[in-house]
Image 1 (cartoon, rainbow, N blue to C red):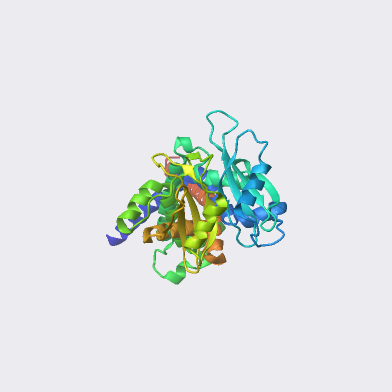
Image 2: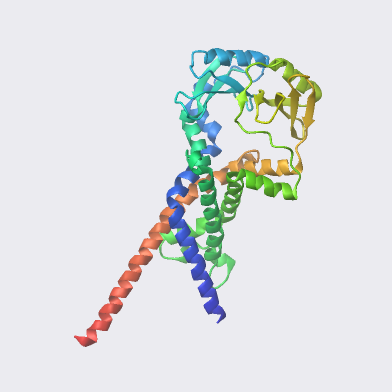
Length: 383
């Protein structure tokens, strides 16, 4: 009786694993492959567009106003009336990057996003890129919301991630040898068929990382729900505000002054990004936001545009956990080994989809052949 129940449970999980896989395969393959490429986004982009990273040195030798002025000059003829929103300081000897936002060429369309790449020592413009029309810009948008945010694309990606999480856990259950014996399950020759061995052996080794990446992706796909859930178990700071809002045309403080105030408020840290004031809905005051990194931690300094008062905002434990969830999913901030593992979790779902469909089709073919032989055997006595 126990064997029968085990067989029934195994059949149930097999059906769940199979039909979820068939149902989401068409979306899972491009979503996972795009995620794999995004793990090495900067490295691949350096190879594709070497001029964009042809810096003359690593020192950020110019004031931030010089970079902003050069970026504004580079897009001065663009009819979208582009304005700088973010200045990102370089890491690993890469360029200063300034994100600029403006109106789309088409009425009612999403705002245009332009990235200007500048040489850190000289502030010379290295390249101007429209984010959404670039290769990696498209991959980012597709991986996040299938390029259809207005049709709940982000939520669809989240549900695909939920299906992948279920498949990774049920796959681990199905991998376990029926007769027990963990080491027996690690053998390549569990079957005489290459696709079966490939599907099961690779599936075992990648199942746990795949479950982790899927779970973190689900968290990122439902940000408000995830934030509410996280705040129930760990304190979180106030939301930083989205990318929306009206870019401030006039400010009381200059960018150089805002950065200088932030530096003085945290003398043992260096800025990693400057967010220029944006008028958010419901906010009366404009604030500059400077992301800082010290020896042991990263934190935020806000500078009131009118008074010049600085406020150091240390991340709460919930904020740190949320950041780690994003880093785990992206394969960043955790070393090259984890980045390689996350890359493989994006590549292998395609292998699983191909081998799984082949196994399913072969099983259906074998079943039809058995039924045909059985029907033929039943007809022979009557002949």
